Image (cartoon, rainbow, N blue to C red):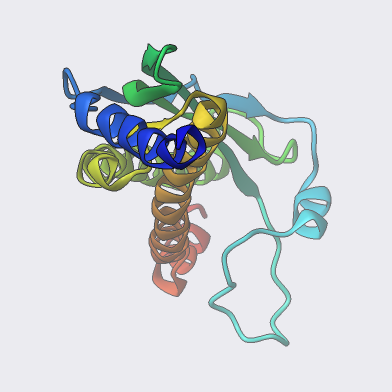
Length: 221
């Protein structure tokens, strides 16, 4: 009879554990998405020939057979850094615990460098026109940075309630659940990052138009 009673007793104990433990999120997690732009760096070490061979990410508006030269290039590195903090509630006697997001910090860093060919002396018309054009690329990146900082914040707030977490889970699985939660947040950010890169390419391409290139070409006698 003792052996027969052990099975329903174990089932009853598990039922009581799940019934007693309520994993209600105590507070909404804090979510911070910070865009950060470093001061633009300027590089004058390369020649027109060097910059031309280096190439750009945008597509030239000129026909393929046209011979063109590059007087300036803008390179901007955008880096995402994410940090997550969690809250735990453990019930060792029951062998279960709860896990919640406590805080999510995302930093998006923009590090732009403008290269202007050393063939152009400062204070000349050519230098000023190239500089004005390249600064348009930096402005676009800063606008994109601010826009997607807001979009990432909104996406995280909408998604965090659907993330794995809470519980109750066996205490032995809490580390695994935390890894799943981190991967989920990373996927939300990655989706927005992909959308950002698509829009960034389109908007940077709109800076490098035929009309803009021709304007620069004709600007200096």
